[in-house]
Image (cartoon, rainbow, N blue to C red):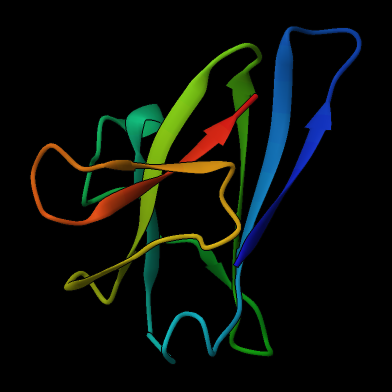
Length: 102
């Protein structure tokens, strides 16, 4: 699990590429990136699955904000990004949410 931040000089956005390896995805068939940036929509479009079984998604997010998020594996299991900038308790469960700060 990881993400890459690319700050755009011409705009007030950061292009963030989220990546999840096949092992980290626990060999799931689908992975959805769910968080503050899509109102925690469990029906968000799935991340793109690569030939090696890993998953990727790129979002343009406004700079200067923090976003909580998690990965939804096969529409049934939640997974954190263990390389997140920080973690905060979820208001809905006993789990933590991953946080990316831009």
